[in-house]
Amino acid sequence: MSVINIKNLKKIYNDTGVPVNAVNGIDLTINEGEFTAIVGPSGSGKTTFLNMLGGLDKPTVGEIHINGTQVEKLSASKLINFRLNNIGFVFQAYNLIPVLTAKENVEFIMHLQGKPKKEREARTKELLTAVGLEDRMDSRPGKLSGGQQQRVAVARALASRPRFILADEPTANLDSKSTENLLDMMEKMNKEENITFVFSTHDARVVKKARRVITIEDGKIVSDERKN
Amino acid sequence: MINSVSWKNIWRNKLRSIVILVAMTLGLMAGVFYIAFYYGMAEQRINSAIKTESSHIQVHHHGYIENNEIGNFIADAGTMVSKLESVDHVQAVSRRLIVQSMVSSAETGAGVKIMGIDPEKEKQVTNLYTKIIDGAYFEEVSRNPIVIGSKLAEKLKVKVRSKIVLTVQEMGGTLTGGSFRVAGIYKTSNSMYDETTVFVRAEDLANLLKMDVNDAHELAILLDDNEQLDASKEKITGLFPKMDVQSWMDLMPEVAIVKQSMNLTMYITIIIILLAMGFSIVNTMLMSVLERVKELGMLMAIGMNRMKIFAMIVLETVYLSLVGGLLGVILGVLLSKYFGKVGIDLGIWGKGLEAYGYDTIIYPIIHPDYVVITTLLIVATGILSAVYPAYKALKLNPSEALRIDN
Ligand SMILES: Nc1ncnc2c1ncn2[C@@H]1O[C@H](COP(=O)(O)OP(=O)(O)OP(=O)(O)O)[C@@H](O)[C@H]1O
Ligand SMILES: [Mg+2]
Image (cartoon, rainbow over all chains, first blue to last red; front, side, top):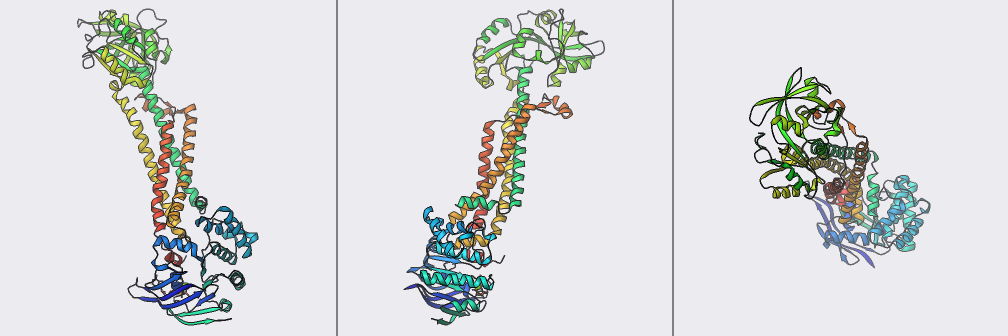
């Protein structure tokens, strides 16, 4: 079943006077349970593409359907709500609220969704245990390593029960050991819980773990490989 | 949960928050104390003016105010006094014969206003008798006793029991003199008054002026409640339409201004302090928002809606101003209460004030209503200064905010 359906997606930046075709005609379908890496050289348009896919930016041309909803047509306030309930985000950095503990960060998103306290607490515990942080639940992000912070971010992204998780270079700031740990953890979630992941990366070791690798150059898909 | 995030956010940059909190606390503490000090000073001035000088209401014969001729007297004042004493809220009435005169000692002379009073009645209306610093209040000198101010005593170089001569114009217009002996020397907080006002017994002055003891130039009325001032004035005017009836506000416009300016002074002081406070909060909160652009972008991205972002920033600002503001108000109140008990001795600086009738020891007064008003204004300032930084935060676009490098 397809979760993401993209038709003729384009993004032209025009704010310098010289138009930049950052994304230049992408058609793509991503199915439930896929573990997809978006790769490509710097400036190829990965971030621009993922931002549109996540409803953070409007396309210049094209359509994005997520689970049947045409995202780019949503009003600003509906879009925020849509993101809250359908997409889990993991960024390269600044994922967490620094004044809240790991536990509170995970709880926070469910609080935004209006989930009852009991459910929030149970799920937070379950997720932080799943990402291997059961003994660091009461630490603030500043007291956690980069890899641990990214794992909290993944737990937070999962907490809202999204349709898929979108991660723009989640391992860019991590050393190789933490990168491997994070990827193993994501892979496990994908295999055991059938969570759909879409992530961009520059890291060959990350690419190796992906089961589908989409390569973008100059805003266009140049290859789309599936491994098994 | 958002309110706990807001509260914690204040303490992210501890030094910055503490600096602004200290500034706010000191500012408001000083403001509250200044107002309490000013109120104390003003109320002492008003009370002492009423108690030593004017009483609450005075009644004169028509024309006496414009022209202090001794001929403008109230005849049969005794009957009027009895009538006045039965009016509601009138506590006591003193009748006075008054004449402008020259007083001279062996050394020198001066112009003064002589008040001819019934010492016992006067006690009930003004507190002159409590202001005696040397000698006694009319007692101890049996013939022609006079009570004079310390400033005048200095000027005339006289002491208790010294003889002084009063020169007056009697009813017919002829100049006449009488010799009096200083029974007591008084000192009020108004040195001007002390220098120009002397007291003798009404019958002695009536003798000198060749007037009837039952005549009076002035009836001074003490009320049991200053709040009844206007109502009582109206009532008395109704009783004696042919007389001039004036309250202390009419008689001492310079003191009335002090009373009227009390609230204005308070509002101006508080508004200046709160404006300064508001601007520094806006500045602090703007810095705090700009430092957190990426984090705010992240929060919007994951689905925190505008209303909640707005609420978070507004709450941070309100907490900040409440902590600093309330701390300042509380400390200001405590400081004022403390000095309200022990008093603040202005010492040498007070000498200048004394000439204007102000006490040299000030007891600050806290009025609960201005503490409440100040607190409400602090909350309002907090909310108002939150608007701009919060609006700045709302204008962020998550995809752009996340791209910013910092
Ligand atoms: N706001 C903008 N205005 C103009 N041009 C932009 C803007 N944002 C991105 N671009 C341009 O769009 C192109 C695609 O940028 P993008 O950030 O999507 O690439 P990327 O593949 O994510 O690169 P990297 O691997 O370095 O993160 C680049 O040429 C970039 O300079
Ligand atoms: Mg990028």
